[in-house]
Image (tube, rainbow, N blue to C red; front, side, top):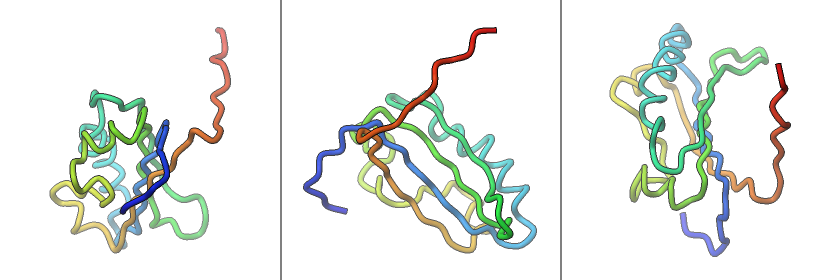
Length: 116
């Protein structure tokens, strides 16, 4: 994926999957452990989240990770940074998948933390 555009960051790495019937709960459990371990404590990683689609198609899941910049994404995932990274056992649960990288430098907002 060659691009002349500068990716300033932060970058949202969005992994989307269509899960095989009967595998949603198993893959969500793997997202909480295996996928989290892939990004947690990596240089430039600012966090992650995952969940299932709310619509009728309950077999769609996402795992999203937030990175400070494209350099950090490429450092973690290497030459295949623009491809889905499937840890062992994931392929058996997934019908199809995609990966997207979204440059959030154009505008995003996190509200200030609420005081207790």
